Length: 174
Image (tube, rainbow, N blue to C red):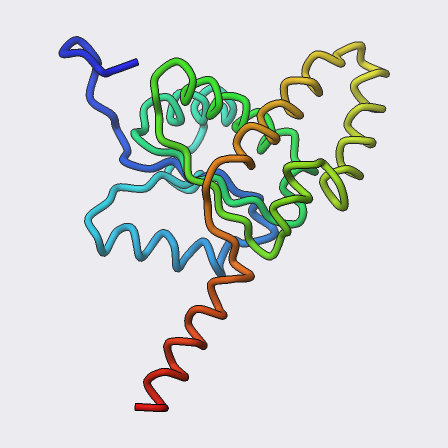
């Protein structure tokens, strides 16, 4: 769906969805700084006003962004917050035409796409927990969002270092 003149302007250029304990202070800080250097206005949860409820504020921010970057890391699927964000991101992609860019940070993309490895284990635990609560529909939404977004063209961090090494080796050989 194309934006119309009645569409309100986005507050942020980019929303970054990530599992904090996996990447905060390392990869995330470099990504955030690189976006800002290119005059791209990124949002991270640190931008929330203190005292706001996290979930509604985050969901609104996702909707108010032009692009969502999803950083899939080893423990991403362990977080119900991350998975709820992912469902909203998929909704914004489908309804608003939001651009979604996945990054696979030290994770095999097929683990996410096929829900195996850590991602499969997280879903076994989530499914059990949701069965107890009677909310299996939520797990189905999480599964669909993970599979849909992980199938988009993105970046695999395991390949990036090889590209850097190749470039450095080419410089040395000249």
